[in-house]
Amino acid sequence: MAITASPPAGSKVSVDDDETDYMSMTITEPTKPKEKETYTQRRIRKEREAEVKGHTKSKKELGEEAAAARDAALGTSLPADSKGFQMMAKLGFKPGNTLGASTNSHARAEPLGVMVKEDRGGIGLDSEKKRKFREEMEGEAKRVKAEEGEYRDRVAREREERRLEGLVGGAMRVAERLDTEEEAMGGNEAVDKAEGSKGEEGANGSTKKTKPTRQINVLWRGLVRQRQEKERERRTRYDLLQSLSRNAAYDDPEEDRQDRQAWGTEEEEVEEEDPELDEFNALEPAERLNKIVEYLRAMHHYCFWCKFQYPDAEMKGCPGLTEEDHD
Image (cartoon, rainbow, N blue to C red; front, side):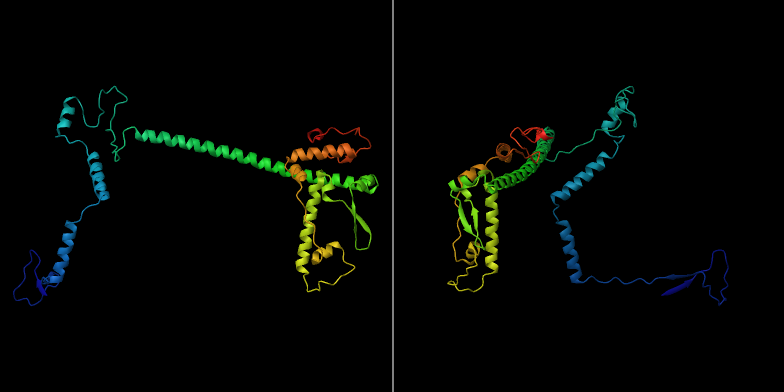
């Protein structure tokens, strides 16, 4: 490293002065000798340069460059030495003013915008696509609105059907109870004998009258069928839980018919098909309810809507036959 001291301008320094002025000293950095490029470094550098020169630009890159050049050209004002500017100047145009007469309030101060069309569609294709898209959106909105209305109607209809089914079940129970009470009072003993009612021995040895399912009034026969099915399922579960080892020849005199069916020592009666019941169940809930209500009024002088049994067939005080009459 070379260190040199130079005297300040306008000062005189004695040659015999042995003192060195360190404040005016300048320090020069030593020059680093140029390193020789190795063969590997030169080969890598040339490969990179060749790769840059031989790179083929993609369609996206070319489009971006073209868009950038177009924006730069559109953002540049028309030069004064151009032929177009000179022609406009001869016609009275001045930079910063609008085109045309000064009295025209709709004159343009900015040039028209450029919209580049990159597809092969016609000029009116975009507006046609917009029109079709708008029609599709309107149709979809109408369809959704219609579906919402249909959904509300369907939910209301299902809710009304469930309500009517509940009323049908209640009317069935009322009709069965009134007929059972009338039979218990001896009003239908002759009918029971004619219909061939059979006796069933209970656990205490007494005889219990049970009417065959086919002979039960179809208006509440479905209710009896449902109870029989539930009882059958209960006995089946009981049989599965109580299936202990037992001698098949063992006979318990205290067992009733249901116990013997549960243990498998007696075959269970299989219910046959009932076309009459199926036809009644195929009716609408409102129609079934109307039939049961009419039966209650005709046979028992009972109004299902008033929840009251009248003493005679005139049923004085009852507003009417339908539910609307009782509102």
